[in-house]
Length: 178
Length: 158
Image 1: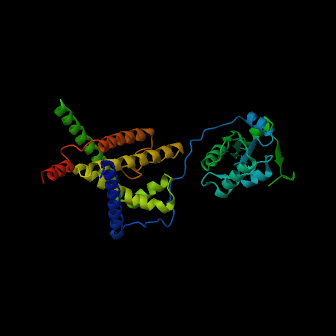
Image 2: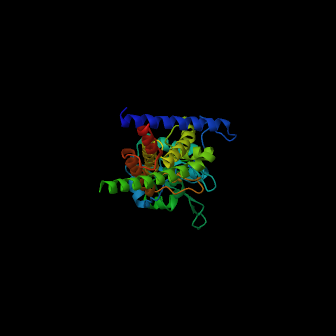
Image 3: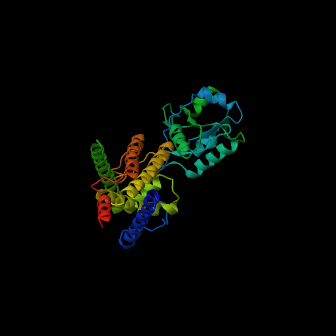
């Protein structure tokens, strides 16, 4: 038999012997694992290096172009109901638990359906009493990027900054979209 | 001159064999002792479907240790070296995919996720080096300190 074939056959035999050893040992050891995993492993979440900030004025310019941007509001639902950027989606970001998976999935589906090039997160928690408040937008943006949404950015300064930049908003009682 | 070249080839063969053997036996040890942990590492790469994760996690470490031990004694040296090449191609591909997908994880090459090496492109260079050693051993005649050569001499004298 020619040497290359012999080497290949030997390699297959070694692999086969290793498999027999592996499966045999696994069958008799008390901490053996099932041959086919019955429940998914609790793997680490996908982690994306996110660091994209967009200026409020630029975000406002984008808003003027239909279909160019999808805004995502990181504030609690009641703040969103009071006032939000026209056409924005609500994905409340909890400092403890992050955004809900359902909200992330909804944003992802909307971004894909509308084929938007940029998804801009905004939202500051508190700050109405003159304090700085807690920036939620960057955290939400990172989570949006982690679930695979492309073109995610965030705006600092929340809704106020966007309004100063000229972004159109919808207030409670305007008959706004959900 | 020819004797000198043979001596150099044999010296290289012994060193390459032992490097690969130590690396593969060392790499297999933790995985064999902790199959669930290694299954978790395999799953974390997000390449294989769930149905194949445990099979991979069970068989790969045993293949590593068997190949490592065969290389130490020099039995089926070329076939074992060929298998190290195959495994290194698999490792390089997995690491490249993980890096391309921005997966920040431990490579799971030698130890648990807690003590594992950080995933960097250096791991690919290391595995390319090991692949080169394996490829050289696959195409070379086994060195004279291998059981392969001893058995060959015996067959000739028989």
